[in-house]
Length: 241
Image (cartoon, rainbow, N blue to C red; front, side, top):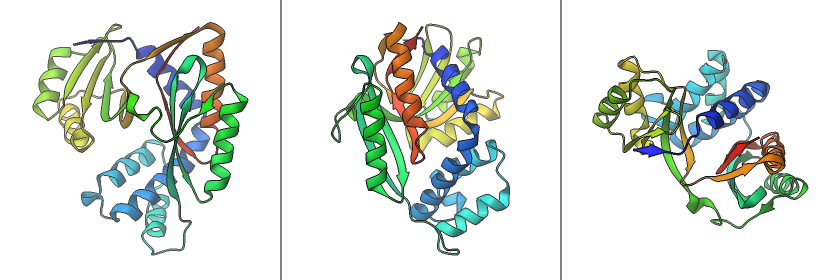
């Protein structure tokens, strides 16, 4: 199945995330605490916590730091109580934006998110205003040149829903969130390591945003991502210069 070219956008996003590596630990710690509080400290029984710990290890977080924050979340140590809040809105050219936050002060967070939207040309929407344009899904992306037939055979056998070949040759494997880990494990066991592997909100369709509008959209996305309480920003803009 062919799909829209998104490899450049994925690489661009990864590059910007690498530039902001200093904030990764803070966000991963919050994710660990919320996941552990919701599902317990047992990694084998808590897939969300396993994913958070994987992110922490990928960011070179020490094991004792990981354990300490799991202990905080499960009541063994005193910690901060974070809640998850999702905000939705529109960016430049009507592009849809979802902002996932974890906060200990929702009044502060909503004010910060609203300010970023209004300052950089976006508009905050109501709950559900854009979420229908995204799909909650496990996503694994392989670089152009990867053996498409091998990826498809292993992924579908392991429980993936779809394998999409983008216009630029990148291969996207899509799976239900519950099937994400078995699919990833099967692919990696076959020597197929994805460039991106995450449970995400994937845009069903993209909106082309180019030139000055693309620059403005990037400023809005950067402003949202830079907020202390923001964990993830999802959007459906295909940005080009």
